Image (cartoon, rainbow, N blue to C red):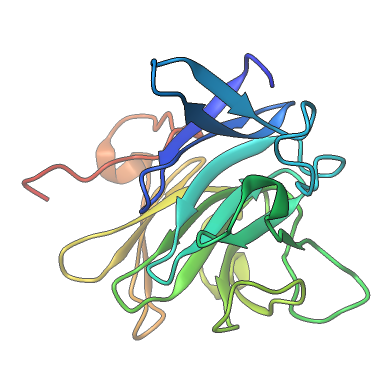
Length: 212
């Protein structure tokens, strides 16, 4: 649906999803002879996708409960990976709604991850971290708690999140790397003074190698 591909994800059922910046979500279908077809809202393949508000898909992942999560510039979009047909998918959308308490801190969601405690965290453009308080992601009225400069982050510009083998969450910010203890709430920041060099951190999610 668009040449600006931001993310490619294989879900637990082996389906390939492509998120584009400008064309929304695509589902890849491959015929027996190897021909590939891309289903999206514009060609009627994913007619229920909220493309008007969520054309910019930054990241796609799935929870351990089979709840697909799409990070978009128009909020968090979720759906059940057990759908019967692509054109019948029920999409749910959560955004920054000033009419409700405990909604997203900003509409532009950069990244999502589920940790080993099965808690879901979202990295928000200029909005710090939103932790999902609701247990079921398949709803339009999710509630969130916040981790931000008010809690000790050096910046609210968080790009991505990773969990290490000890259960600490590592946050990639625009000008620092932070370790977050989810049990105590303690935040430890490492910046250019610790690394003795300028940190150049972008939107691409960082990785943890086999050595930790």
